[in-house]
Length: 66
Image 1 (spheres, rainbow, N blue to C red):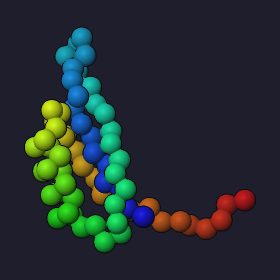
Image 2: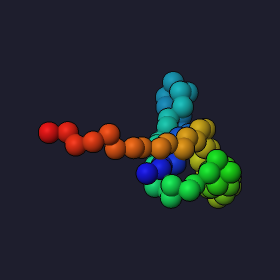
Image 3: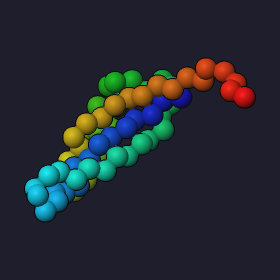
Image 4: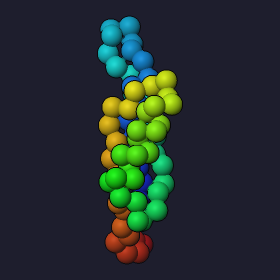
């Protein structure tokens, strides 16, 4: 299972520090870095926020935990 994790700058606090929001999008296992860059470019273009970082995360099950 893969996820695209985006970190958006959504504003600034009273001390002028950045305020962030995280967004997670489930993607297909065949999702590539090129796909990720395309998605980030499109979302960044149409969002009022700035995408500070993006990570493609792969998760694997390790077995049953009892």
